[in-house]
Length: 342
Image (tube, rainbow, N blue to C red; front, side, top):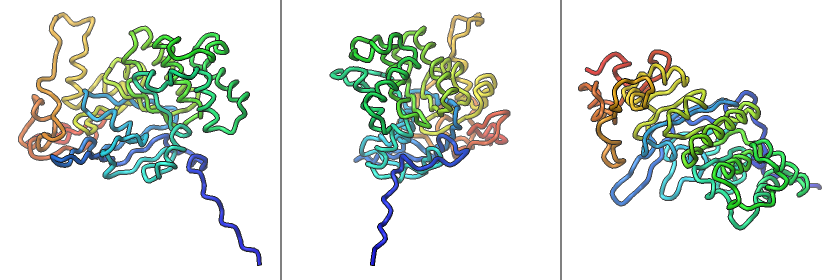
């Protein structure tokens, strides 16, 4: 009698993508850090969605939780950080429950990453070509010759001149802007559905910033890749993103289309961010500022975390935490938009 052989376990990185699925769905994500002084909640009930070919800008001050959200999606939280609640789906498949080995196969194949300092993503001991070829062959069944041709195509696509020659060079032989282009090529190597770009232009001068943001926009449109663009720069958001999520103290406080949120902000924090941007038409020489500072994770105020800095805060803001509600053409977590603060 012949026994039927059990099917081999399916590689999560090779599963078919559900048709019409978002590039990224994050539902009620909570990230915690257990410490000797107690439990610190870095991300508190965050939900975001990115469609294929869409750029979502995630903006806020340092400490708002932008980068931690991106690291949680990538499965790169450092211990003792952990996902305490919520679900993360890439291309319709849940990934937050995968083992580390499974997640390693999905990361790179389904998700790419672009970080602030390209030198942290490039090995100084290997040529650019060797690193690209290794990445391509890790995720695609290709011969070395085919992978090398794809590497040349990727370098050309991200705007690096003479790509055949540059393949032989090492990271230190590239300028900062060119290194960032190489990192973008690495992120695209496996044709992922989602790219997490964490402050990809901060270390670059203004002219190179514009080139990189234009490149991200073009690649997003051509490849239908969803991009989560983490930045503190509202100018980058305005030029690059389709939608924006404004974060404060681990929560999304306003979200909507870029033009709606930037031209008609509904949350007092978003209004403060917009007012702090210098204007060529302003007659006053004094920049507006948001008084106070972002609360520490172990010292969040009760109610709305922004109320100590909010000029419109009322008694309700001190007692209860607002939820995202429709406000004009966006959504804002603010009692003023939900009928009042009393």
